[in-house]
Image (cartoon, rainbow, N blue to C red; front, side, top):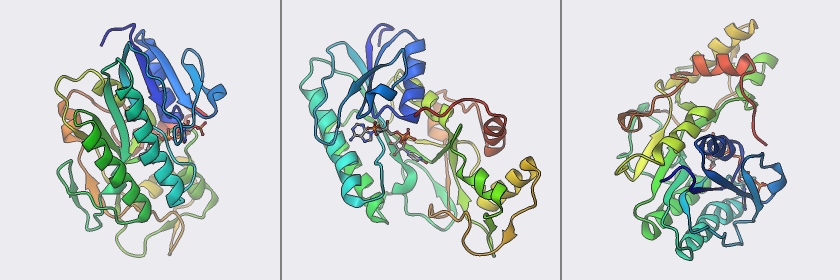
Length: 285
Ligand SMILES: NC(=O)c1ccc[n+]([C@@H]2O[C@H](COP(=O)([O-])OP(=O)(O)OC[C@H]3O[C@@H](n4cnc5c(N)ncnc54)[C@H](OP(=O)(O)O)[C@@H]3O)[C@@H](O)[C@H]2O)c1
């Protein structure tokens, strides 16, 4: 990878743009593919493409391709069109090009169907417990067959500037503490996820899969109490519903990613949410 090579971001949204800007700062020419290319900020070059139906052109000097598109809804057909057909089209584009880029594909830790609070690593078997998780498992399997050298990055819950669902629920009083023990949840600040992608672009002999998550799996109620304290609002009341998540109960390990030299700027939700509450950073459209 040379500094003036091209980097292609397929699905240049919030995470893809943050990664793209970081590649650009290193001197790369960055192309951001999305349907609404007009939203891609300079110095990234926006190109309009609907990857569900189009095979993108990958320039011959491309050294890195990042796949970071997200389906616009949880409709299963839309999910499959985006994650499976979209990935297939990107793979076809790479095959048709003279480039031999490192391929980094973002997936989700939703592929782990674990709800007993146990530790999850890259070696934990995946299982599509929901129809949407099933589609992600399908996309991952396609990647393995078509591009055995690709690097899969399974991210936990991405939060960051402008992604303030939990904060809003605590502020408005609609968040609820669990009647019993609350599940372990896992998250990663958007900037740390972007930094991980840029870092993995140059790691020698990368593993096939990395979990992208911060240092501390945390019980959801601890996060809610922390946010209430930071916001200066009453602690959420106990009850059903509210901010309950459907992410199971698992403790994700970032040991393998950390072993490559990546370290999170926001090691836990405390540093990360403090930065969000302080208004640091912007959400990319
Ligand atoms: N949010 C989480 O907690 C979480 C957790 C784990 C993993 N992830 C993964 O993280 C990745 C990035 O998420 P994000 O937060 O950056 O999402 P985002 O801001 O919604 O960005 C997604 C991008 O994908 C583009 N896109 C969607 N469909 C497309 C298509 N058919 N053709 C071309 N581009 C398309 C969208 O642009 P257009 O609409 O303009 O096409 C948008 O720029 C996704 O792979 C997501 O699954 C997220």
